[in-house]
Length: 418
Image 1: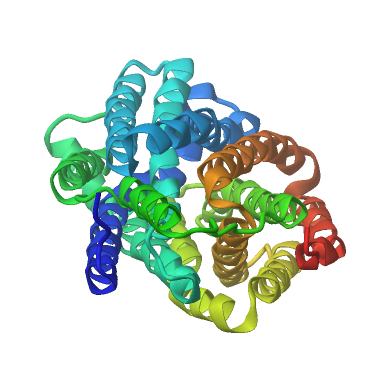
Image 2 (image 1 turned 180 degrees about the horizontal axis):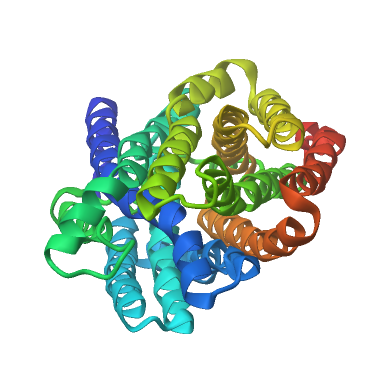
């Protein structure tokens, strides 16, 4: 068995990052459409705004249920097959959502959104796939480049709401589902891309290189494991995601009410879609647009400092959500800062988790991290609907701020040597 020369390994890594980035562009379209339309469809089909949070809960629950199985599958057969399976889940889920809207069956809608979430578990693992062959000094950068690529699809998804409705009406699709036609095309392209171009498989190659390196050394190289730091990284990622997901999940409902207020109760679906789509597009741009900057900062400043920078940005977002939520621009600023804070915390947190884990434990912990992140956000989204109904948007911001305080208070755990 031969090892790849250093130059070839670097070339394989560049190709891997490129393929993963293109896949994230395509996968982000379905994610952006689901974020924008899920809550509105849930509220429409259920007839109750309080149940709108179940849409985000379903997408995150789907990701939670599939994160660990997909990680285990990747460790056995490689990233390529795991990511492809995730795309298949998303494709089926999009079809189920369209069917549910046509039949106006609320539980079926949640099943479809849950399956899209299962596909999103694969998208989440793409960022870890970018670290499989990365040099340690560039781990944060390579991870963040793949996260950044989601910007294009994630921003396009909400902005396609208007054109999607026009195309959907022309071909007889149910209301508010037209943009899912673009999602179907994009997910199919992503599936083909991973099947054809993600070769050699980055995780299988990294495992082979590690085995070759161990065989060539008289004394095996031991990479220290720091479980306390890894657990803090998992908590920081999950907590930051809950803050982001719970506030973001309720924003379309809040904006819908705001749009009707601005139009004296006579806002059209186009008015609502325009305001929601533009705001969520700004939010998704914040989530992914500056991720390479946060990745570079994590490499240079240290992972923990950038995790804490994320908490500062999240706190700023919640201030706007609490005090300026009656103005459209205030909600937009809150959503942009919310996306930026999530980006800083998750990019740096994922790099911290990877380097704090021994190689034989990394894939397992990455799967657990994604599962806990999604499961926690699912619960947060359900509770967010209840909080919004009883305590308004400002009350939701106050409740979310508790998690930010806890993440900061526990930060010393991210500096330990164990």
